[in-house]
Length: 289
Image (cartoon, rainbow, N blue to C red; front, side, top):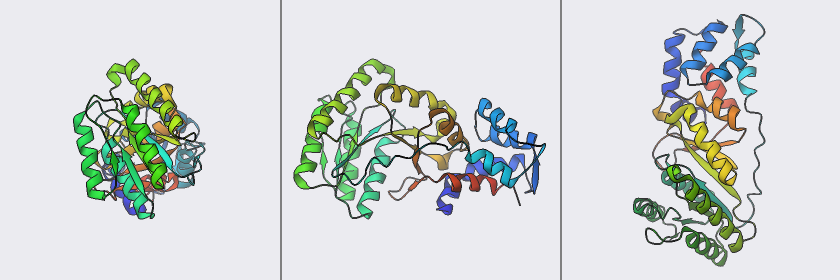
């Protein structure tokens, strides 16, 4: 776990070393502020964290308590023992939705679960092709249609197939074109409504994919999608490619939504469960003796 967290935050911790080249027993508030800002924690949150600290000098325990306090949200498992457990994957194009779907599917396969994919992003032919390619690599079934066809039909057929075949996990891709927000909102709402018609318990979870290289700017995306359909959890991708690892703090603070997984690479195994303690300790390991 710690290895993968360190891998994901490598560029972030390298940026921290530029602020504090040598580890110390204590740091000043100014140093702590510079570290947080350099890691892409937004200014409002940085000021809140700094003001909560009792003295001019900060030790590791004080820093840990300050940072971990941000992750005060309930992680609802959404009764993942329901079969089939239906997840809809939401996010803007380019955030890494399709790759993340393959990683989630691979994770479930390793738990000896049966998985089916639904290619619900019918707006882009490339999305259908990419998801189909992953389904073939992982040797799992996929329900798809042609570009431009009704994505709700894919939702219904995927869930119906899962029920008929006794499949454990259903993962459905969705379109992510925020520039046509009104149309997208209507499309997503219809997909959710049709999912419930196919299976009253569906969808069990709506997961939002955020691009880690976008840093704190992804907050507005998240709020837009949450307003549309209500988001149950977040997966942050591409963290290994950015020094903006501190944006996780901003995301947790602003959205009050559970961060469930983080992406740490391009391979199917490069998706790990997010643990706030491990995340905070990885940052502090670069600061304190």
